[in-house]
Amino acid sequence: MGSWGAGLYSNDIALDLKSAVAAIVKLPFESEQLIKMLAEAFTEEAGRETNEEYTTFWLVLADQFHKRGIDCPDVFSRSLKIIDSHSDLQMQESLGMDAKELKKREKYLQKLRSKLCQPVIEKPRKTLKKPQSLLLKQGDVILFPVSSDGKSINSYYTESEFQKLSWNQSNWGGCSNCRLWACV
Image (tube, rainbow, N blue to C red; front, top):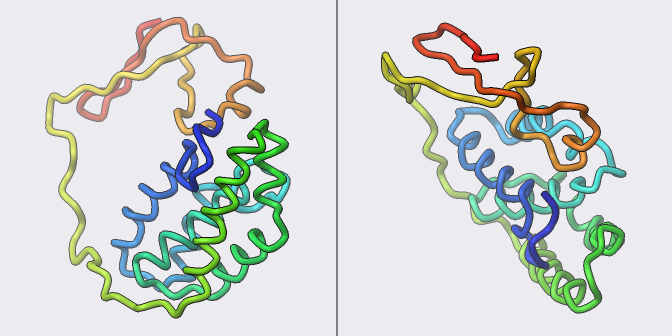
């Protein structure tokens, strides 16, 4: 859905990734496995340098891991390379960020760079000891938009991904007690 400002967390993907990191670090895996899982969840953003969210993905990941005391030298060095090469600033400029906002963004990136150059103070992670209880109770209903042929849309598509689709909502679908139904 685009950028709302110059800050590192001023767009949808940054906030989505921040939430994803908060959830995934509860899993009892080493940092390499956590990174792999996040990269699989955000395939386009993590893997394709030409993706408009690529730099944001790696910068937010580095910031979140550093804040949480998770040492990931590969992530930190990739983020430092993004900052030093100005590739994030170039991407933001190509997306329409004005000169004033680009200067602000550069300040945020330099603060992040300074932080990433500091040693990580490792903190013990609170990982899950047992599966989390279910969020839904018997009788709860989930509703979601569907097209005329009953297909739902991935709510995590970026705006550019959504614009490439020829998908139009015509009604609502839902599920209850593990049964899928649609109103088309």
